[in-house]
Length: 145
Length: 172
Image 1 (cartoon, one colour):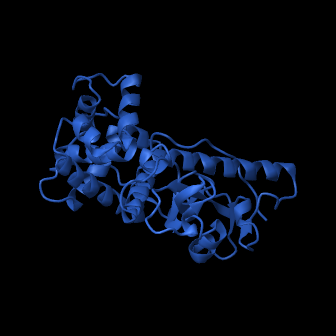
Image 2 (image 1 turned 180 degrees about the vertical axis):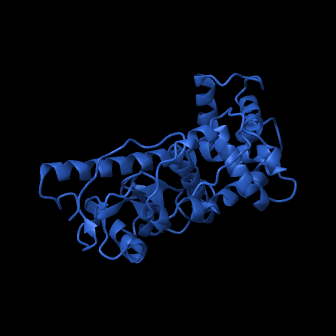
């Protein structure tokens, strides 16, 4: 399932949670809204989803990743958060928020690594292209090494 | 080449996160930053790129000073001859270059900028409200939350929001 999820999917769902129309344009203000709610961009959401979807329990959908990010960024109580994502049950929200948070934390050994300080590497500006919120190649994820 | 031969590759600092007071009273939870209970993490950034390269924790904020955390884990991971840039809380270890360990005004400014950018990285972590407000859940889950925020912040630093650039060239 993970290879069919695009940044556009995350963008549409995120804008819905933000109270905007699903086909909201990627304006500067809308991008700020997305970043304020989820702490990152739709492109990085795709990367996170491709890395964590295999670790999530059966039945995981891409928007559950947004639930976890919403929990980390907003940290309101679960009644508020479950209302924000469309009125799901608090217990359902709780189940997916912790599953997503723990699966993202498992990426730490490969993303936050001392090897990055020891190795010499150029800053790859292509990342900006790959992770642009509405890039046509948004489903293509580069391995962040 | 992002490493330019400087003797310090990393800049390290500790950051405290507020937690609800655990049930049993213990002065070891006391964070001098918040005057309340807190957990402490050690965060180290690559000086040349600003990327987060090391996160260690959690520790009880009052019982674990920065220098003890450094001596327990990160110090053992350093390369032979490598030193580390740090603030005054780490003063006293032979592997640490404290703020005053410099001879020229230029060196002082480079060290100041490295430490300033480290604080910016810590501030990026605190953009996640789960780390900036009292943690209401079980303390065992705080580690997962912090590491998840570190992963997301690091991906942001690598792609869309790099930290400001600094010039750091200190060879001895």
